[in-house]
View 1 (tube, rainbow, N blue to C red):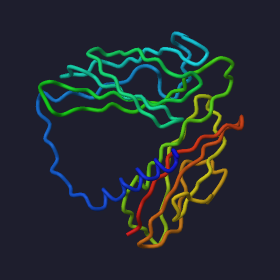
View 2 (cartoon, helix red, strand yellow):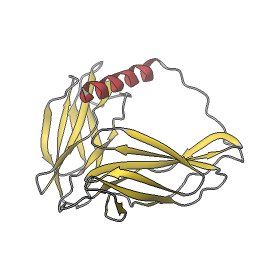
View 3 (tube, rainbow, N blue to C red):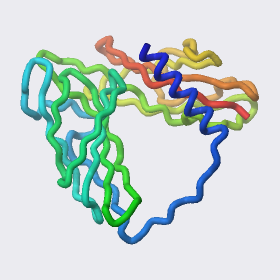
Amino acid sequence: MKSKFIISNLIFAFLLAGCGKTDNAVTPTPNSPAQATLTFPLQNSSCTTGTILSNTQSSITFTWLVSANTDSYEMDIKNLLTNMTTSQTTATNQLTVTLLRNTPYSWYVVSKSSQSSNTAQSATWKFYNSGLGVISHPPFPADLLTPGLAQNVTATGNVTNLTWAGADADNDIIGYDIYFGTTIIPPLLKSGITDMFLNNVSVTSKNTYYWKIVTKDSQGNSSDSDIFVFKVN
């Protein structure tokens, strides 16, 4: 059921990108809030600092640097296993949240101001909330970079390039499997790729393609990225 929901959202986003119009850019005002700089939990880390509440939960205090022209912050945390996102608001540059243990998360902060309708989003960081007895952490799901979600691609010589970014709290990634094709659930194209790119992927004009990356580590753990869709002009 979750896979159908994710794929439906991807297709809906693709259709919107194809038929939507481009709005004029918003000119920042002097009172626009600045982007916050995240400080903890660290990017791609295994977080063991926090208050253990039970075998399955712990509380983590997230922190970031104060940003200029900001009255409040919205912090968004995404469970990378379920793809569920929760949001909380605070007037300070820290927030304590109860999370599941043995679970990977991503998070970012949106700076807001009562003097401006503009907002500023921080970088997105990932971390693994550790639990009892964990000596090996699965890789974080890879971030797909290019082609982007719902992008229209002009292929050169009927080929395109795929790029992504992988990370692991244990730094023991051994390779990536690339799934790519014209079906919503793409088939395996290449396995055991050690780079974070694959060049000269054959495509055909006017076709729509789907792709994802499976990241593997030396302990037999793996993680699946989202499925991205793009169209070749």
